[in-house]
Amino acid sequence: MRSEDSYDVLIIGGGLAGLTLARQLLLNSNKKILLVEKRAKIPPALQKYGEATVQLSAYYYSRVLDLEEHLLCEHFLKYNLRFYWKSAGRDNSRFEDFCQSYIRSLSNIATYQLDRNKIEAELLRLNLESPNFTFRAGISDLQVSLADEGPHSLSYKFEGGEVSANAVWVVDTSGRGKFLARKMELTRKNPIRHGAHYFWVEGLVNIDKLTDLSPKELRLKRDREAIGHLPFWLATNHFCGEGFWFWVIPLQGKTSLGLVYDSTLIDRESIASLPQLIDWVCKEFPLFARDLPYRKVLCHSALQDYSHDCAQTISASRWAMAGEAGRFTDPLYSPGGDLIALYNTLITDAVLTDDPAELADKTRLYEQLMQSFYEAYVPSFAVSYDVLGDQEAMTLKYTWELTVYFAFYVFPFINDLFTDRRFQVSFINKFSRLGRVNRNVQYFVSAFFQWKKANCEPTRQPIFNDFSDIGALRVAESTFYRVGVSVEEAREVLDEQFDNLMELARFIVAHAASVVLEDEGVLTDRAFIEGIDLNNFRFDPAEMRERYATHAGTEGLYEWRFDPTVLRRLRPERKAAAASEPLDEEVPALVGQGGAV
Image 1 (spheres, one colour):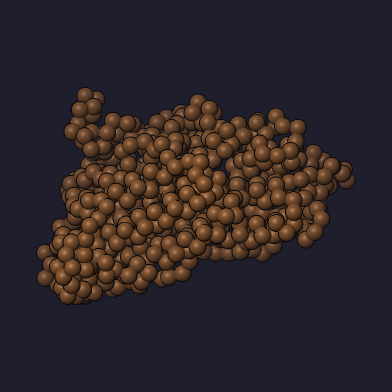
Image 2 (cartoon, rainbow, N blue to C red; image 1 turned 30 degrees about the vertical axis):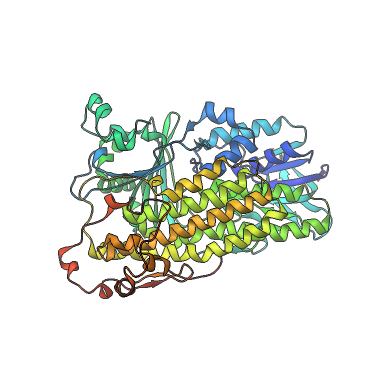
């Protein structure tokens, strides 16, 4: 057995989480790092999934890890997230047949569509430039013995021999292998039971050109007034249905495509093979029949049940987990990169903490933060995934979630606040208060969607909707410009944003009630709106009717900080039979479950 020098940090796994953690440590310290990887080649020959970034992860890669030039030169700048739904009055064989929801303006924080193989190759190249970085690819029989005090010991086989070493810290970024979580029996299930089947094709799938229109007609179509001129193919495009979505993501020279689905709503056997998947997509969204059957497929893969939890991901005994080695929720909204950025940042700060007592305090708080970051996503995917089937309900859901994300994830991260003890406690308290409201919102919009299925006509003509027309989202986005703030200023910002979110929650309830009761007057009735209990509300048509009938007009008009009629274009037509039925018999009320985020 060959003995090596001691290391400050052992990183297990050479994927995105491990390579970025190594880069962050190398940029901020002189720590000696050993990164081990069982695969012989990094990046691998096969294409890797997880291309889309959103504001937090993109900021982490570009600014914290100083990859901005590489991202702009080697990857596409991303044009937000866009969502599409079929129109019942069209055959949906053309792009212009589809309803669309989007944010038309570009984000002030640049986001990117990542070619995972490219960025991982660049991260490895940069890390290898440091004399403090040792990389071992193609290792086998890794053994790690964790010690409560003192360095951890490890051994592995490499290039025909056995190597032993020790490390002060061990960080598992081994992905779905979950090296430490399995070893320590920390793996946990969560309520999300989703699957994915995805593939890459040669060339650009330009969804705007899946049409009968001529190039001139494409340029001059009146829809541009609402949806703009920027290339739609630059977005992370989601073609949606109840409990599923199909992504279209551009990479240079190829396009990433994939179906993500709730396993209780979509039969896996119907999409088990790639030909079955392509056939299913072309039938569900006929515009793709113009393109996908004729493309050269470069690579494809699938995951049947990818979501998982972990009992603990960081310890004062100097071990931690990041990326899919610890926790993973769902690819909708691309939170995987955000969790990598958040966890890596907390882990880096812990690794740089020498005092054992200070480390114990930090890791206790950091574990609480890590759990909170993750658990806040879970209701979005476990409770209200069905809402993907309706443009109006999804607009309420996504606007809420994006407003939370901008204010409580992106704003603190770009101000380096998550590692500031003075900020952490107040953040956790505020975030926990938000948790109960968040869960209630998820149950509410899901029940609203199910009610609409039974009582409303499907959309027959394309409707275009900008999410940021709801003013609360613009208020949250304004925090992108609040940089370099003090802890005291940050607390004030969070107070303002919390109030903004509470008003948005009231709007969600009021808008749904105005649809159920077929009365826009609900939207400005002060007594009805102020009577909403944000800690304990549910979708109950009978209760809505009774409360509105009792209190309507008794206290005057409610004054919103944004236009409450902004979603008028999305208001559905009621089915003739449903219009005469008692409201309290149309849908069972679903009670929101409380608890911390």
